[in-house]
Image (cartoon, rainbow, N blue to C red; front, top):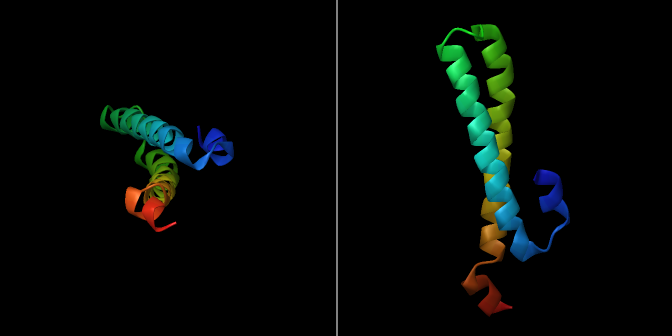
Length: 78
């Protein structure tokens, strides 16, 4: 979804980014379940969850930029 979002029109990026964020949240939830059930030790959980958290911040920032660029007030200014 992220790769697709890189190449689609600005108006369509929001759909791809929201889907990517939703899938990332699903991965984080499943990872958390693995850790809660002790199927994954704390070290491995940390090594996986920290990069996922950073990816989430980056995707959220990208989504915010795209939404701001596509906002009606921004379009009206152009």
